[in-house]
Image (tube, rainbow, N blue to C red; front, side):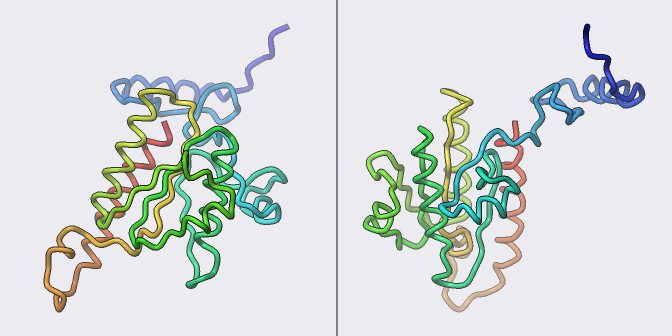
Length: 201
């Protein structure tokens, strides 16, 4: 016997109406989160952080970690372990058959450090970049290229660090000029929205 639908009738009508209204969108607009269909908010997998306790804390599950399909920001004081967590994410991505990408804005990454964590450097793409604009152009290009080949391929992109990057305008200015923080924030906000929409599809 087929399971009787328990969806709210009005909610179903509204979902159909919204999806028809935005039918030219590249993805559906209205969802039910009951597992009967794909949703951009559904977490498709986990990448371990290197700490079982932290995996549990950030995902509320024993075998969790960083959620796949999400932008994760790691903040903390200098030498507090931010790069360590990022390196573990890359290594554990590779263990799952995925691709690790390291975008370095400070030219400070250590090969010995990454290898000690377990990162296979022959299978990790290293991309040194300086500006916010170039970083997000590269990230967008990577996501688009991966989607052309396999939408199911796990890819972890580490940017170390986003706050250490400058804007193109700031790089071209003189050292005594200031006031670029607002411009940087605007670019970051716009880029984050765009990337979030890309990886959520």
